[in-house]
Length: 262
Image 1 (tube, rainbow, N blue to C red):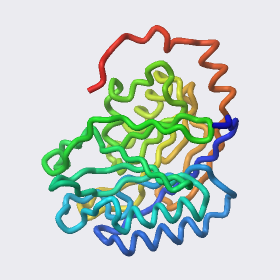
Image 2: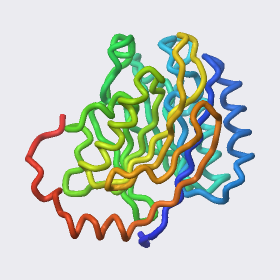
Image 3: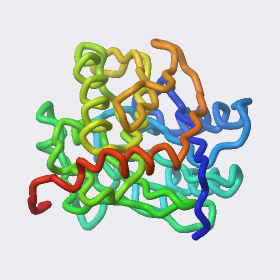
Image 4: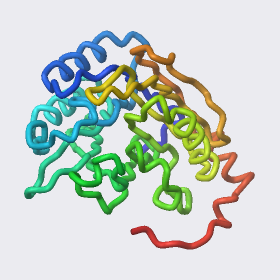
């Protein structure tokens, strides 16, 4: 694949209507169609963007050919961009917080959230056991979902396998300080860009979210951030050469300890 120096990543920091799939999908359709900051290579949506972070799986779960995925795949073609998000998936009688990357060429990749939150998700969903790294436009891109961010061994960038980590989240405001500092830590230790997309608003459990969607570079510097408590789409431009140069000049990744995923 031809190497692309620039990568444009659009985050869609938005409110989510509690357990109303049709209303959410229509709302995101409007947000994407009204974005006025040029073309994007990747469009990132929050965790469980079509339902909110609900445990009502019997009512809300879908298969991978349900309305959430069908619309995401149509957006990928319409905007010629990879669409990133997650939804409540049902497969063989089990439920997953399933991340996805819908590609403009029609392919779709999936990642089931590995670390399930102790506040109910762990009792209902099944954890995934595989990483997802996608080669796209000359960049290697990894996906993690919310609570995964707390676990550096799972996210270790062994031998610089990825250039960008995308973190989709519904991370509440009472733990916002933790969220933002974990994002910086993951960027520094993995010598990778990290881009997070978090929601705003209040959910059906009366948890509030301020957003804090942002791009962090491989040195841990925040390069751009959405406005707190505001629905906003913002596109960040990532450059490949400075990342590669930093890894070459400061090759700390070569001294990483050995470990086994799983």
